[in-house]
Length: 193
Image 1 (cartoon, rainbow, N blue to C red):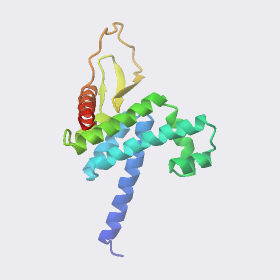
Image 2: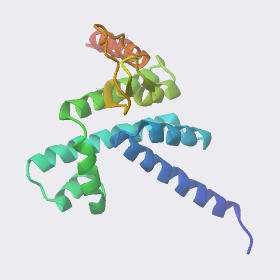
Image 3: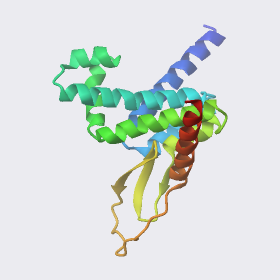
Image 4: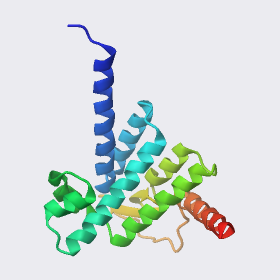
């Protein structure tokens, strides 16, 4: 049997789609290392950063929508239909949604929209915008941190915390960029009205 170009493209497309959904799950589960590994794999596979950003934002939107519907007592089948996801994915997504506050999910959505607008208006390149959603660092306060849409979700490291607490912690580079993007978006919107 001969391997055709179509065979290779089909396998590559399936791998790319699978990695995108794995990355969305890693973000929702606060697994920043896995999310970044998958993100860089996707870039290597020439996946467009704007598609990646769209899917990250969509994942937050699904989580917020499911969280709201669960609070209103909707059953899983109805939630699946309204959220546009398969019924088997509802339980996992609800578990992920509980890992975020509703305000955190809304802020992540707002930041995703602001970053997308910054790209479309030429104020930021597409890869930098996705980096802002996924940027990770070991913060000076000795916590593992991940910035998702400008919000810091932290998980304590297993070793002892430093005894001295910092009175004022400098904002991360991601937070600084998002502040600039939000401010320029606000000024742009004011000029339009």
